Image (cartoon, rainbow, N blue to C red; front, side, top):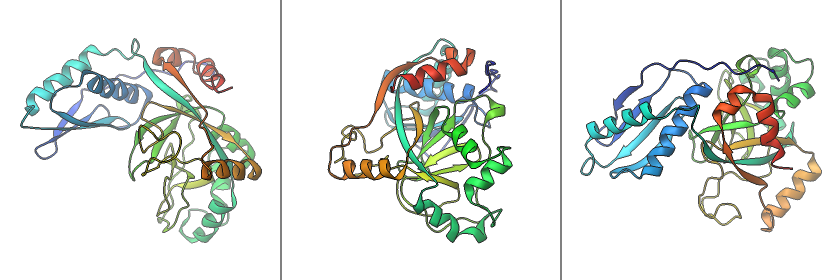
Length: 300
């Protein structure tokens, strides 16, 4: 990981759009960056914290956010004025938020995603390699092992939950020139195992349920990220495990540990390993290597 600081960017003026009678969409930038997403996290958390009357739901995304409001209670012009005021007041360099750092065990190159990868090779850019081999090659790694070490070697910020219910999108917390970049499949798959670890563009995703997909497949986690019935330990407050602004640490495991964790989950004895921290964007910008190390140490 680079020793230098992560360069901060100047964000353009936010763009506001109405979505029907009760939605406002706000775009802070056209592309994901730490500056844009940290600003999104700060604004949306302040909206929730202030409990603005008339706001029904807040959905942060990578470089934008969506707000549902009750037009009978809150006029959209008043809402936008409030949002502009928040955007002017919030200085990300001074802002902090409570985040949970989760240990997410991953069985890389597991038999289930490997079988899926092999079943859909004709839809892939390189039918003669696996997804891991292809990703390692186009990102300049000399082996799959080195690529996996890089993917699991730094924490990932949960930037948004979406696409399908409960699916976390995660952006690795490394300088831009160390970000992995991989295209999606040329044609989507019609099957993906639940809890698969996928990668597309510059984002890692965890598939919460079986279904179609197009991200490169790297492995499978034994832990659940979605529990609609909220019966499992860790899902008492929400059916989705991580929130935007939380941080995931992907940890390599083998088949024996995978099976042991699955057994614990199924018999109700598994407890998620996580710790709460005050995330400090400015400290991360100044020294990402040191800050990431401190984040990972809280799980030890």
